[in-house]
Length: 502
Image 1: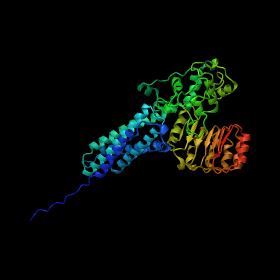
Image 2 (image 1 turned 60 degrees about the horizontal axis):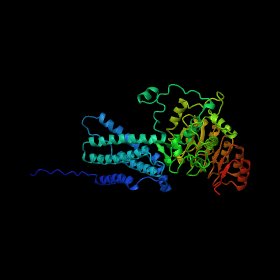
Image 3 (image 1 turned 135 degrees about the horizontal axis):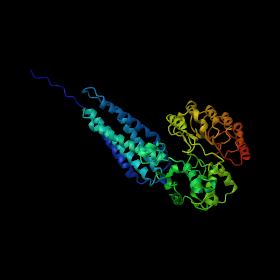
Image 4 (image 1 turned 90 degrees about the horizontal axis):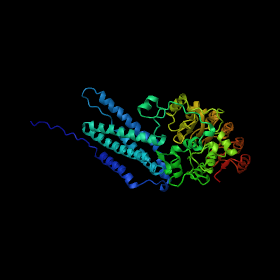
């Protein structure tokens, strides 16, 4: 009797996954070659729109690959006998797919303009591309390893390599956004010494007003707070750098940054005085804006010759500039007359860091030297409602700018802002607020800009805003407010620019 023939087990090999994976890799490699050098001026708005999703998408592959890494380490160090154990294929697929989306969005952001001639941005771009390529290759190898029950060593080697590249690329991205010293700014002295960084052990001596150098001690700090974040060595938008005087004069793609003796024709002033919703305005919407008194000081310094070495005592200071300097403590005050602004304490920093877990990228300090906070819901939009905003109730008194546009907040959220006594700007465009919210805003006498575009406010509520004597900008597009009410407001608030879209 013949021996029975054992059935042949067919193993399904992932040829289709391999084909599409290699096709994705080829596309990623070809993308920068075919696109050529970035030129923001030629890019359509759709490129910029899609590119702005990069900060949202990049968290997906970071989280997924970190999870897979920990799972693999667990399988390596906690094996049970000779049993073969491995992670499922789907997380690797999701990680690779999200890496491709994040890199494509980042590529569009890069080509949308503002990162030309930026070595760090270039390195971040290529780091992201390499990570995405390795991620897809790791997924393909994982699929084959699972299909043929092969050795997992090569797959794991690629996985560890992809996570390492991801770490370097992520660090470069954070450096572009926050500055290269972001991780070490508040490092303890022993760690700073270990890293070879300067340790500031002695406080700087107080400089008398008359001995202050106008550019270094007054103007440059304004630029540092408002402009340098986007115009520095690591991130020179428009090829303009404002972190040194020489580079400020040199300018960028549009020529000289400043014209000594002519403030009105200096490019930075022209940009600062554009409409708030203009795409060319500087700083852009969502960033801390140049205050009116700061602009007065900048223009005075430029019109006076923009000398980078002159002391305050060597300038003629008109009355409006003296008043502006008084608002710019500690530079304006006589020695000892005013205390310096209190830098944010450790408790407040810790609280903001904790709240930022719920609101990534939304809550932050106005500057490193200020305890004032800004809140922007650009990345949250329809996901933010009254209950969500209430989570930051403990820091509302520190808020100076709030952007709640296109969120689900109502009058209940605005009521919480009654404790934000220093609030200067609020955007409530396309929200569910009504005239009830205007009663709250009327209590915030430092408000300078209010955006009520697309809300349900009426004449009765808006007319009360005439009591906000510091109001400089009011946006009332697509509201039920009548021309008669606009005329009344313009008469009572002659210094306020009212935009109706008409």
